[in-house]
Length: 561
Image (cartoon, rainbow, N blue to C red; front, top):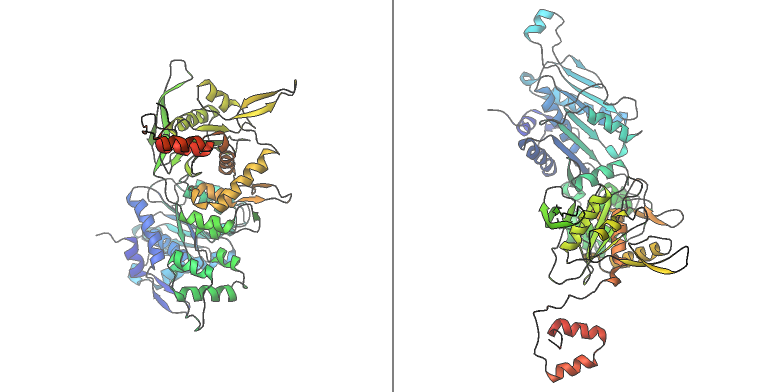
């Protein structure tokens, strides 16, 4: 019967503890969670890919080296690569593999021909060709390197890769990573583990966000500091917890010993800086990616709200039939798919008014996006986000708007007016109209679409900032909240996405909030529901303000048939 990787590791490999003792390697709860996620992919016949965002010293480097050692020291013709951010870190990781080899049962050790500071080659050390042919060894290799040098990962094929502390790699991370991944076959039973503590908003953050969004094959796994059972201390006898500490306790189920350790660690290991603690020992992914910039939105509130969001109830895209005229669409319908471009948190309610804000791709590197708001409550109910052509974007917008009760659609027209023109040609019934001045005649004319200018942009962003501050529960999409986290004031105090980040979802949402006044805030009256009006009801209706009359109409219908 074949032995699983877990059985091999726990029966044969040893690790050195912090007090310098050699003990059998038994996986802790956090390590088991990573192992099982990889096993799920393997059993499904997929390449094993994981990106790990973690607090410090949870043991993931040890597990990664153990998995790579098992897969290399027990199989023929396997090449494995370990890449660290510094030379001393690479040496430390490689020493784990050497320790595994030296302490495993002698009868299970594979033949080893080379074991220097950067490579272990499991092959026969025999020089005599005849003897070597009878017992050739595995011809498998573990190589360890650090970043910054030229050619990391080039000129070879790797079946297993561990990228350690990726956020702190030096040199051109994109170039190094691309070279490594080109060397890894996209076949089942290959293994790639990327693990790191966070280092602000850089390439590791972008890779993490892509995995969370389902835009890569990497499974995102976050491990907070309180999953380490060693992070505990006895609280001081007179300890009084702050409101923030009590909030953490309620949110994550922390006990007094964990709170006491957190307080001790901030004071002693983080120079009293709670911001440093949140980066090194995060409680949620959003805490990890702290930055020195000034966030336009309340960053702490963003992190809290993002940790509370739930998965959409549906995800997919709209299908439709082309009309005979070649422009219009017939029978739009929603089709669910795993990585769909439309995410829905709430389906449309009958007679409910909705608003859609759209932001088009600019210089070719951004996304086409749309945000759907319930205009009665302001709640974010659906999001569209993808890269594709303007005509496809307009058709998805058309279907999305019809799906949400012919929602008011306001699309930015700064870069292109084509999506709005196509919506109009398709006969979409409710497009946002702005007043524009004819530059030749000076006359005011009505124009479709939203124009983001130095006058309108600060207004819609300020509205969105206030809306989030007062009602964070209305915001459902973690990708939008992620963009809001990197939406910062630059040196000129202009709000914009940090370099290398996106703000398409933020701007689409700001547009949606900015045009709400051009849509009704009240449900459309039910034409089939009528109340038997009494004289008192009619008198109340006549005395009521227009706003209160609308409320009475919703309750009782209109006073005439």
